[in-house]
Length: 150
Image 1 (cartoon, one colour):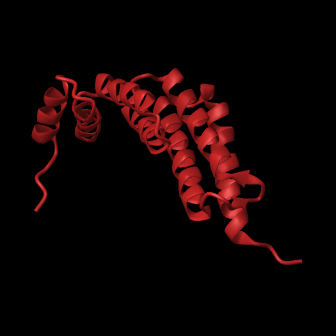
Image 2 (image 1 turned 90 degrees about the vertical axis):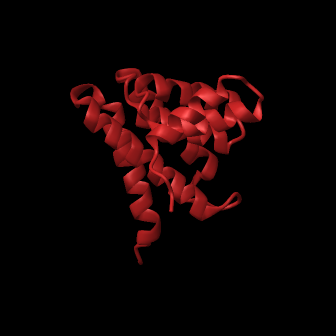
């Protein structure tokens, strides 16, 4: 019998992270956010590595995304000021083509932390694609918050 650590490690991260988020009522909001984001990153990383058709230990790419979103939603419900969790949910929504949800989540990230330049930029870009006048406000905010690239 051979243990396949390539399967076991991502699955253990996924389930430990999910258990921590579900039991997060006893944790601080910072711990909750870190566990939720770790779960989301693990799920997304594994889903991207697996591709559309593949699955790992019975957890498909789509299920990994569902689990990640559930963990992030739990994090934002317990502490709506966690802009990183909103940003991660927006990124997932955008990647799946749900731009309406992505815009809503990016807006929540900006409300939670107006100094989040990445959220300002992402929101501004999506709004610009839709031709919305408020896009410029977010793009200008991002330009003042993000360091210049060389």
